[in-house]
Length: 195
Length: 282
Image (cartoon, rainbow over all chains, first blue to last red; front, side, top):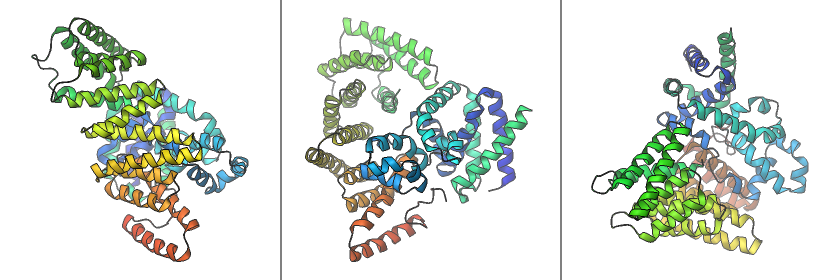
């Protein structure tokens, strides 16, 4: 991936976002991250993938996964084993299922929007905090995005981002590598925009 | 608003155009007005202008209501029901859809008829009436020739079925899952190239702990393609889950056969690690 091109693209998009919704800086990283990942993987479907997140969760079958699948999800992750040791030991599927519904989209499906929305908790592995904050934070983001969508400039900025990113060879890097660089870049741009 | 409702409204837009709902011949004044305001509400809703959308749906409801009083028809009740759905008037919407269906649709209007039934089932589901909703979804699965409705009905029916099975005792659960499997089989017989149907089948096999079958269905789903990236990723996770389960349960000869087959699929998909699809964090 050409770092300079991405830098300049992110700079432009952040400055447009700052103009359109300066009070919602917390959404810059999730939105750009989703545009990056979905834009690269399915360039023609950027609008559907980026803007349809508000109808999350998808797939609808997350709450009805078999007990064995849920147990395996927790048991295969050493950090989850540590945090949910007691529930796993007791095979408390009610509690595990409640946590699974919120953690699986992040840790299992690595949804780029949600991963970016909970980036701090993911970095510090505070998974119980994610479960507690999940519904409220997602509802808030959903409401904020819904309000923004009526602004043509917002859609235009996302479209440009998805199209330009898909033209870069960013697919060569892993999603997490790209997201890490992107987070740094966006933070720098936000600071510069604030100044 | 739920995903299903959004899809339903999108389908309704298609039906409006396909059936020429806006043609002058087909319309009398209140019906025409109702269609106009309903379409306007849809436009506002798509642009996330919620207040304007609500106002338009209220006008559509008013006009459709007048039409049902002066000249009741399936179309008028369907429009009334859809406006009520948009306004989240579940009980009223249910009545309108039932009345629309009781009037019957003309030849060539099967799509509208199926859409009305789908609207009714969705309304029942929103009202928490899972059993009757499941019956209507099932009937649509058996009769619908309109692929988008069939797929949505399949998804809803399977979801309701799995919800119910999860709350049932062991024997009853097994029976319910076998019934769901029959439904998935039927869908696949009707349309083998439906990747999503194979995905559904894989999910049900997984509930039955038939991991070999679940794996096969998930592989077919992956090969055919799935409607969204998230469902694709969930399907990849299902493949990995089956791999792990089969490792625990197969004897050494069976495992060796399976593993060599798995290696072939991995090579085809570009996976380097049997438990980690490439999109997963390293």
